[in-house]
Image (cartoon, rainbow, N blue to C red):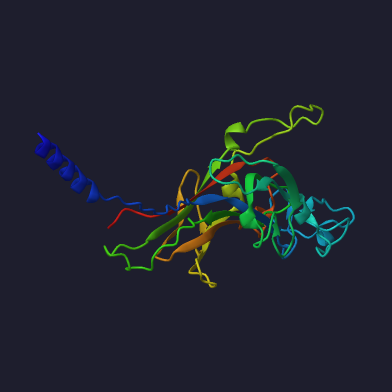
Length: 312
């Protein structure tokens, strides 16, 4: 028995002496993407010339010729003052404005706080903007509306969508051991939906304070000759110059149509991008350039995506 106990003690001692343990640490870094509306702008260039037409037959006319003493005169003109044939003092662009609500940028899953509202009239040559390029990534738009009351079509406006890429630093292309690589797929498009024509049929009543909207049966996008274009501007981590700087051509788009404007890809380790969707009223000559009094209303939606597609 004594020998057995001694043997068991020696065995346990040997096992204990050969035990091993390990403490091992590693880090986990996590960062997602963020996308949000971040800027908007509006301008309306000075018209090239006045438009004068006879209200009876819509033919061009000249008030200096038609409205002589005793003549039947129904020649209506855009711009100018009383008897003024010049457009040098036209301020109709100031009847176009936009209003927006905004807040400082907040992270995913965090509600916007301290929301403020601004209203800006259009300018003539350069866009009147909500923010500028140096500050817009720190702001987020929560609502936006353009209200265009100028005598003629010709307004241009835009909205920017900012994209903050993940803060994870990725290896250079083809440097993974499994030959994988980044391959961002970048797409952008727009739709326009007519909201006014279904409301047409009201009658103007000067004395009825509750009857203030008389809508056109024709859509805003058709009456204005609305055009759209898209652009994308991206920078990569550690690089000063843009790695993607693309702008599409102006194009038409119809009610309910998803118009794809941007379809690009890059293997760069992106820091961020911004999409710009620009819109232009192209009916700027002749009688068609005179903005309809009957109200028109449209809703424009932008669709922007920056994704890593499935492995090909």
